[in-house]
Length: 438
Image (cartoon, rainbow, N blue to C red):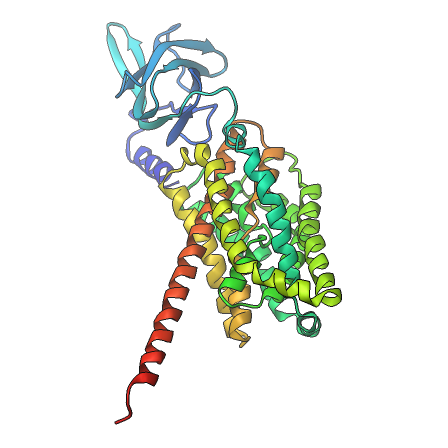
């Protein structure tokens, strides 16, 4: 945006005879700041509004900084209402380079530079046949087969810790649930949109971040609520409530922000995935509640395995997320990484601050913050993959993966800091009790 305003201001300062009446723009990419090449042969379409004074008097020149990485095969010109050029390239090595595109015109024996686009970043990724998203899905199925029963068992164990009295309290005073819903479905999407505009992200990538911000609380929220001594029962209730509200709020937000961002088309909301996520939480947790009421001794055994099992699942989850997003992370730039860090951090900050201002108990404040920051990013990933065609879907899919990985890392750091602080406090109190009174 700043670059465009600068160009307009510059052209307004020169005389009409000296002002350039042409411009160059890319047709088949989202952002002229960086190009992603993933195939052996790539083509880039460049559009020019320059009108030839004589037939074929204009031509396009492409200069590369790293010819060993990327090579121009040829540049062909197509004639229509406007003049288009097709640049045919061949990729050799993986890496990053810059290219400059210049439009020249022949005027008799002289050649005049009409316009140029300088220092366009090009990132060459490892060549592959599938899309980035499909390549990222090739994870070890044996790990998933092993992890799934552990996840169900862990959710069942969480059900054994649920206190039904808390449900009754929340039903009478639903303020924590309301604060979480307002943060997740109204404040976070707006903040995500605002940040993407400040950082001038491409439309598809901006939509990916907005959709990630409008996701309900993730299933890992009550895990961290347990480890950080929050309200586990409230965390599970907030996850179920926000997932149910997502059936209405995700379509509404996708429609609103797609229009604001100028993206047209029909956006497909994965209703089946949202419902399966809800059932995946409710069914094992309900089994745990039933075990606690009918078999209290079995429930005690299940409660003992929650912490070690949660640590194992948390580590495996972060590993799988990094492995699935490894191909997508190769397209991450500084702006995307910054947003990935900010989104969960803002959710935590907003949720905790609103609960604190409302004078809710400390465990409740922690839970509202955790549920607002730990988002179910893979619902956004499903919307993106169902709604966009390649390569736009790959560009937008970077957002949920980045947010998921940054959220996991941030929560781990918070957990380590919390445990270290608690341990120091216990050591200090122990020393104080052992010291003789003077």
